[in-house]
Length: 128
Image (cartoon, rainbow, N blue to C red):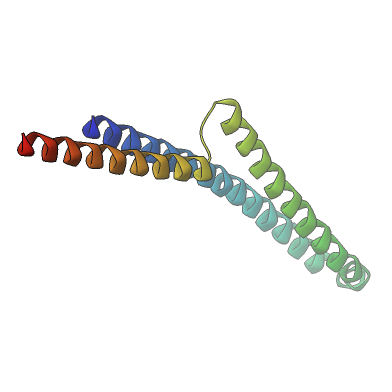
């Protein structure tokens, strides 16, 4: 029975770890795509600057605003992605880290209780 509980506990940890890795992978892919877009925009901006330096001064003012907006959008995107991943995992019935921790604590307490019962049983058997 202890072996089955340990196997279950191990499977739950492995499952939770895989889900965590999937979420990190999704964030990485999103980050890479965002970086590609950013690099493309930098390249286009450099071309523009090379062509028309006089216009660049006017554009520089709005660049700071655009950077802020992109940063805000990126933050919102990350939050949305995290929320969607969390909801998807919840819909799939995947336990959260907290739930797995609580389950692990309960299993540990059950194992302690079983061990105490076995010790009591052995002690009674020895006295007979």
